[in-house]
Amino acid sequence: MSDYLQEQPAASAGASRSEERKIIFASSLGTVFEWYDFFLYGALAAVISKQFFAGVNDTTAFIFALMAFAAGFLVRPFGALVFGRLGDMIGRKYTFLVTIVLMGLSTFAVGLLPTYASIGIAAPIILVILRMLQGLALGGEYGGAATYVAEHAPPGKRGFHTGFIQSTATLGLLLSLLVVLGSRYISGDEFETWGWRLPFLLSIVLLGISTWIRMSMRESPAFVKMKAQGKLSKSPIRESFTSWPNLKVVLTALFSINAGQAVTFYTAQFYVLFFLTQMLKMDAAQANTLLIISVIIGAPFFVFFGWLSDRVGRKPILMIGLLLATVLYFPLFKALSHYANPQIDAASRQAPIVVSADPGGCTFQFDPVGKARFDSPCDKVKTFLVKQGLPYSSVKTTGEAVQVSIGERTIEGYDEAAMRAAIEQAGYPAKADPAQVNQVMVVVLIVAMILIATMTYGPLAAVMVELFPTRIRYTSMSLPYHIGNGWFGGFLPTVSFALVVYTGDIFYGLWYPVLVTGISLVVGIFCLRETKDVDIDKV
Image (cartoon, rainbow, N blue to C red; front, side, top):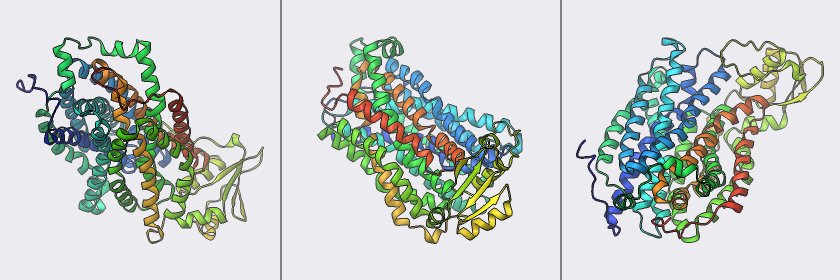
């Protein structure tokens, strides 16, 4: 380790193609593994809700599971500050080693963690702590990887080179989905008992590989040059966020591209999975398989749009991606509903479900402590409909008993037997029929969402590196990136799912990403400058 901590010679500015490939591969592979660790939780949220949040009702348990998923995103900006400061003061490569070890050990520990049934409330508390440690680690990872690769890239190729770093998040997600599918196959019917632990335990192997790779990496030439000239920042955080000229760029980066990019990424690769399995009741294995196929098709476009941004500029591609997201999300998800579960789509059109009730008799069914009782007729009706995964709309009345209209039939009060009969008669399925899923069209629609995400994410690393000076680059770019992705993006599944539960409209949760991308589009058009020809050694 002492040898590792000694300064290694920097790669020359005229690095050969083989050296360039090695830098990209070494940086990207470790980052893929780190994203794998982080995304495992999202891929297993439904199982984790049962294992660690069993003390509350089913709807609250799933929202809690999503909140624990979001907890990792919540602390990412703090990781950006901690590790960004270290990266600007002591070097890019040293930070890599710390972040990967912290991430790998935290993920491995989840695989060993006793469930709620074994140790009670301590289980979800420890789980959230481990998720927060993962978030801290990832907060330092991305900025370091993007900065490291960009500072090694020759002029005119930064978008292309950093495009590989941008693809690592999707490849990490893909790896997590593949390992989850493999674990389901190995454990069979026991997957929800013990098989879900296998993907987390595998992370110890990936940790060993990543650590070995990172030990052999050289320091960034831009950092070595700056260090030799005695120009290292003594206080990167203060320089980044208390100087208005730099803070203005930070805020522009956050609200013009990072917030919007974040929701496009998590809509295309997380929320779409929740939508298929929770709202459309698709078989989880089938939904995962179709998402894997879509991710494989879409992943190369991160690199493609990074490369294209070297030719036509970063801003045009980013703005077109945000525009497409704002305009197309509602029609894309409505088409997804039609092709993924045509029975429920047809039934909701022919026999829509409407709940008419006094708002005073209905509550938002989110129970943080598992003690609330949802006993009113309105609450019971909505609980029943949500558990069945049935879309409904609400009509406000005054002082009248709750009524449930299912097509032409109206049911007074809470009558579960009558509702079940009416639902069956109207053609609402208990779950999506795998044989009726139009798999080709589902893949086409998911790929369309992924392509939108690649347009906003592919050029992002390059433009973020180009916006900030070398001496505070790691810190300055990491914070807006992780606020955007950690807060705006990370909370998307939780907020959107809660909105669906509250309104009964399975598409209502899309208002969150659409509003965020719309705001980012406007801010980006008027405030973001083009950066593709910037000399990053001089900014």
